[in-house]
Every structure is written in structure tokens, then in C-alpha cells.
Amino acid sequence: MIQLSERLLSMEESATIAMSRKSRELKAQGKDIISLSLGEPDFFTPQFIKDAALEAMNNNFTMYTPVPGYEDLRESIALKFKRDNNLVYTKDQIVVSTGAKQSIANVVLSLINPGDEVIIPSPYWVSYLEIVKVAEGIPVIVHAGIENDFKITGAQLEAAITPKTKLMLFSTPCNPTGSVYSKDELKDLANVLQKYPSLIALSDEIYEHINFEGKHESLAQFPEIYDQVVTVNGVSKAWAMTGWRLGYIAAHRDIAAACDKVQGQFTSATCSITQKAAIAAMNADPKVLDEMIGAFKSRRKLVLDALSEIPGLVSNKPGGAFYVFPNVSSFFGKSFNGRKISNSDELCMYLLEEGLVALVGGDAFGDPNCMRISYAASEKTLTEAMKRIKNALLNLH
Image (cartoon, rainbow, N blue to C red):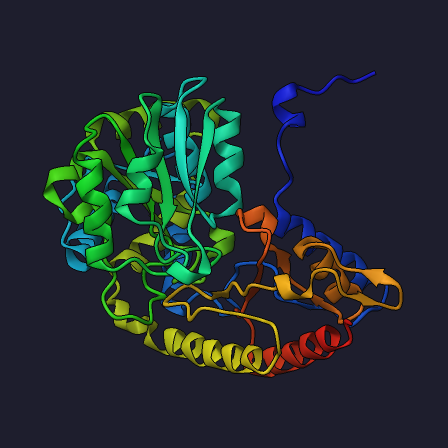
């Protein structure tokens, strides 16, 4: 009998990936499923980035690269940070990885010992919790409700800090809520972090450019905590490069060197061709993304308008990313054809099987009263999906 590790057995499967798999199974059975469960842009990678990849292949950039990435890529990332965020990093502070998920895992494995506490504001991205558990850290969840636009305050952060606290993980713009921290809100967190010099904050900014509020604000901008902040970013979301697999960190040199060491034993560098393509993305003016961001903003309005017509459903107005995270708890306890809904996971399964729309329950994101809707789909698809969701919810009594 095969005995799997306790580490694996304690790990939850990614809820987003699980729902995507269930959707594919139903589609294979001939069901007309609309999937709004994955965080993947429905745009194609810009042609100039694909051209850079072709040029890299033709020039035989097909060998192993330095573990933290090509020097010219890391220099391009440093220039991007200066241009877009007014943050000064050198190439030895940057480590390129096979997606931002690996970037986060590298940081957590580099910093966390068994028993160390990691503060995670809730709602959170599904993998934060599991990565901390793999490192044998203790997740400390700080809840931010819809009434606070799903954002924690400095006072909440400070109340969660103990002598065992080593790290805080959060995202802005946020997955799953789309909430965006303002400069003042980040300053509130920075004022607390400054009091605890050994506490590291990982700021996941992968949705940086998909921001409807104006200028993106980075936590590392405050000089008093610059060395305490690890900034995570990548090319998957804004540049529609999910399949290319490239993320990166910018951090204190000691943390960057530690992540280089961890990565050197797990995967070494990410794909050489992807790295050369990413240079084109880093060097591009973010204004080339305006059309895509405008499309997401229109879709946000479409979805929010549709949700406002469903009695009992409550939503905030997300400032970025491409998610809405409505509170659906008013539907708990209701039934359809003898099928009773007790929580958001059951509600999402009902919407999948009866409404033929795939969503993700909020429990996996740390808020069981909500569900995540990804609007990374065409307006035609979203219009049909929202009609199905409304009809299915109105059938619950």
C-alpha cells in the first residue's frame, strides 16, 4: 500500500483548479457550461511579445540560464520598477521564477520555520494558506469583511502580531475581491510594520496594471520598511501570458539570494524563451494595455449591474483585477427541488449543475459567505452567464 506524506494529505486541492476540472467533465458530457472560475485573461499574448519569443528561438536562446534569470531580463525588471513604481532595485535583488506562485513559495520556504506564524488577510488567494502549511508555518487569518471593502487596517494587523510572527502575505489589487489598497491604507500598514523590523511583508502585485482606481501603489514605496517588503509580480495577468509561466520578486539581497538557493534545488531557472519574451513586456509602455483594461472595466460594470438586480446578493465595487466577490449568505437555507443550500460551496455546485455556470465558493478564499466570479470573459458570455445565475438564484426558496 502506498503511504503518502502527511504534508500532502494536509494540503487542500486548489479550489479554482478543482472547479475548472469539474467544468471540463460536464462539458465532455455535452453540457453547455460557462466557466467563470479561473483567473485567466481571455486575451491573447500581444504579438510583439510572441515576436520576441520567436527571435529568441531563432537566435538559439534555448539553453539553461542563470537560476535567477537572464541578467538583461532582471535589468529590464529593475527599470520597470523604477518607471512604474518609483522603486529602486538592482538585478541582484530580483529573482525570476516559473510563475508568481513559485516566487511566493520560494519566499515562504526561505523564511518560515516550523511554528512560525504568517499573517494572511482574508479573503486571500487560495494558495497562500497551502504554501504556508507546506513550510510548516502557522497561518494567522485576519478577516476583512465586505463592509471594509475586504481590506484590513493597521490596527487589525498589529493585533495579530505575536513574538512568533515572521511574515505577512497579501495582494493588491486582490484576488479574489478585486480590492485595491490606497496609498494611505498602505501607509497605515507600513506604520505598524516599521515597529517590527524582523517582520517581512510579501506584497503580491500581480494585478498591478489591471487597476481602475488610477495609479497603482506599492507597499515598498515607504523607505522606512523598504528592506522588509518583498514585492511579487509577473507577466501572467496584465500581459495575458498565463501559459508562459514567469513571475518575479524584488527584495532585500539576503532574501533574493535565499530564493535563488531554494529555486536552484527545485527547478533552476524558468524557460529561456519565456524570459526573452518577458523582456519585451517589461520594456513596453504600459499604455499598450489600455484597451484591455478598458474592456475589463466595461465587463465589471456589466457584472455589477446584473448582480444589483438579484435580491439578497451584496457586492462591493472592486477597484482592480477581474473578479467580483459578492456575499451570497442570504441564499443559505433555501432549496430547489428538495436540494437545500447550506454554504457557498453547495451554492456554487448548484449553480454549476442547475445554472450551468462554474464559479468558486468563498470558503477556499477565507470567506464562506461569498463566491468568486471571474469576469475574464467576453461581454456576450458574461451576459448569458449572469442571466443563468439570476434565474438559478431566483429559483431558490
